[in-house]
Image (tube, rainbow, N blue to C red):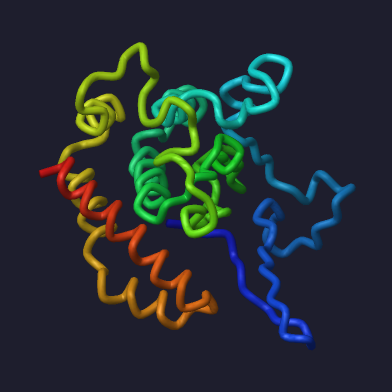
Length: 215
């Protein structure tokens, strides 16, 4: 995944702060907020799918299903077949690592320097499960709208996403083949010992469920 540049810094008193770099600035240009000519166009999926407080209420960014993102991708990006596997990867990364706040505004498309569009760098990747008891997916209808949902949502979601099965299996394999590294990285994190355990337990539970659903 193409992730927006970020890091963790510490103040003099030891307090941590997370910072991330804007990714909408043109290369080799000094980005000034008021100078739009130095910026690339970025649009979140809430806007692309025409969801806002007047149309869908105050919780508009949580309305709908993840399949709608693929519909938006097909509508606005001619090279959607190249971008769709990236979107699928992001959705299932969020699932595996219990990101219950992966709402519509945390997915975006960005203008390239050639003037076309692609899926934007990913951001706000976090495990919300270690803090609150939330649902499997941030969007209220999960993977599919209830009107088209069947017994096996995952199987139907993969079919409707229109991504080759071989590509899907490669993505899932990449996402589920680094148990040891995940444990090492979690162990070396700045989480408390209790939160480290909760983080790994949440991951293992989602991992086992995903493997069962695709077996």
